Amino acid sequence: MNDKTEQFHKVLQLLKEHGLSTELILVGGWCLEIYKHHFKDNGFPVMQTQDIDILIRNPYPPVRANLDQILTENGFLRDYSPGGHVHYLNESLELEFITPAKGKGTDEPVQVKRLNITAQALRLMDIIQNHTEQFSFHGILLAAPNPCVFALVKLLVSNRREGAFQKKAEKDRETAIGILEYLNQKHTEKFRDIEIIGKDLSAKLKKEILSILQERSIDTCKVIRQFF
Amino acid sequence: MNSAIIVLIEEKQRLERAKKLFSREIAKLPKGSLQLKKRASQYFYYRVFRDENNKHTTVYIGKKDSKEVIKTQELIQERKELEQKFRKVKKDLNSITRLIPKNER
Image (cartoon, rainbow over the protein chains, first blue to last red):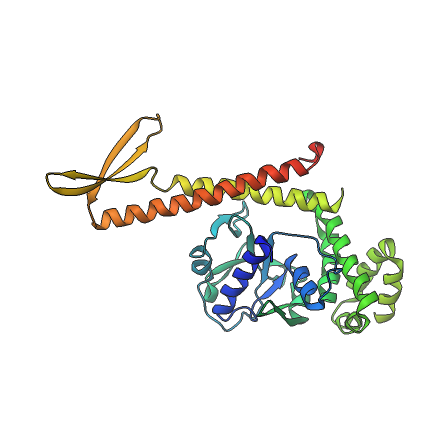
């Protein structure tokens, strides 16, 4: 493990110690390291990232913990974005919490009192929380999205990036398509999960996914169209 | 833009935020170090540091083993640990900036 992966592993260890590693869902770039480890394949497409994004299910998990205290006592510094969202940074990593946006959604930080943390409400996260699996990463059992749902949601997120975040949209698409092509070629059984996930997606979202894939990866688009 | 460059830019932005944050937290903690001095057969601790005008300054903290001394020692230790991390952040920031093409920095 390199320095960053070791630091990431320490965060997972902290979550595990407080009974949270399988209650919270790891989302974002570090999932790629988890998948790479899971498939035991260095060929798995990984785009290195330092942000650890953690999804808090809604309804919230039954576990009570003081996450703010746990993190600050373990070397993370609390930082506030201009929108009032809380991030935790140390010398190597950045950690933030998100939760599925409900109803019309809100830009305001959401207080999760039982975990003593504030989270950012984001759309599409409900799709992820409905298709989560458990993975083992260097001895720690954790919850992360099914890789297919991870890729599909990344595609949808890329379409919603605005302003300064538009540059990230290209990276999102490249990552998502990389995963889908990899699964289609090397793990066809897993790739078929898209059929189940598709049942949870509205016709509009499916159309949006196919439209992005049509431009970027016609072969993958053809296969996914059959599943949808 | 190449996705690898986007990753580097994101990391640079994170390190810039971390640099600001570490610097802010370090400023909240006491500067300098503690010095033990013997006065009339008793031992006392003083904090020795350079003030904002770079003037050598000595501030009385308390008797050896007093609560004030223990607390100050802890805070100074915390500052030293933060400074070490701050140096790593600055080093990483310099390295990553060099990897980003000048027109993208």
